[in-house]
Amino acid sequence: MKKGIKTGAFVVGIIGALMLCALVTLAAPAEAKRIVGNGTLYAEGSGAVLLYGTGNVTLEGVGKLLIAGEDFQISVEGDGKVWTFGCVKIYKGNGTVHVEGTDMFILAKVRDGRLSASGEGMAILRGCGEFETHKWPIQIVVTKPAKPNGR
Image 1 (tube, rainbow, N blue to C red):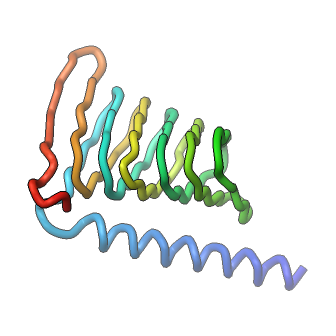
Image 2 (cartoon, rainbow, N blue to C red):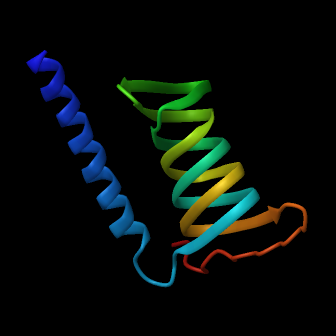
């Protein structure tokens, strides 16, 4: 029993540290864009995204994901690997990964990829590329051009 408690505490500690790093990294300067509500988010380019909510997320390209939650499913197409640590899964690869669930926390880092997320929740985007949102029932389109130097 003590081994299970120590392992659980270790996993919770790791998740807490990763969430803190993500928040410090993504909450920095005006380059980060925060989106809250329901609908669909499409993003293309390179950077990091922090998602929290209920719905589904698809990532295409070279990337890494950390997914935490009690009720979610993950599927992978292409060259990718998934590691499981209790209620946390980590994906790394080149291909397509799809996650669907409720009350999920997702931290994703992608290079020259595409991300789509549909549902209800919050997203923080940081990087370079373009994104647009389609809120239900009204459509709103927002575009953020890539920086000239590619960063």
